[in-house]
Amino acid sequence: MNSEDVAAYLKEHPEFFEQYAEMMSEMHIPHPHGGRTIPISERQILTLREKSKQLEGKLREIIQFGEDNDAIGEKMHRITLALLGAKDIAAAVHAAEFNLREDFSVPHVVLRVWRGADDLPAFQTTSDATRAFAAGLAHPHCCAQAAADTAQLFGESAPLLKSFAYIGLRDSDGFGLLALASEDPHRFYPEMGTIFLSRLGDIVAAALARHLV
Image (cartoon, rainbow, N blue to C red):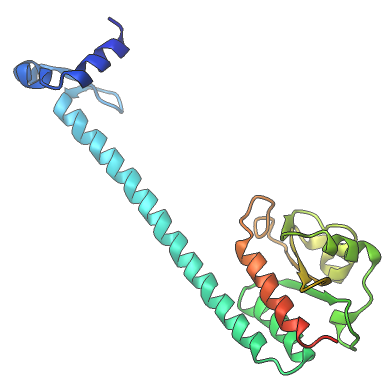
């Protein structure tokens, strides 16, 4: 019999442990961390303790994940209220940029809109390449290098930036781009979840669109 046969037999015949209880109490097996042998009962206790630690670790991760999501949810609520309270396009642009910098702690925020006209920086002329890039964004895009020719949007800070997130702004049609960046290479990265970025883009786009001609 090989080890698999023995394991299968014991699973099918649990009464074996009752019939040979005395023998089981005399058996010693290697300690999982080496150095000595221990009774099977002690080995079972160690196994249960290890599983308990693993479950505690997973529980802590779940709790932390929930707390992080709650914190983000609160920030989303605040920026939504700020945008809803904006009386004109200037107030809406200010609310979006201010909350992203101060509440979400995004150090570099660039907003560009190419529908309508205004003297605000957000309405500065945007290149065809940037517009085409924004039009192709079905979902938020995170990367380690500036996409298309968007580096120029960040001015003198561009060479220092290590991570970027891009969100296309649209209602029935695309009309703008929200670009976020950081010197921290781990702030935005290709594998990160983008559900909150997507919702953020929807909120900002809806708030801006109602003030655009």
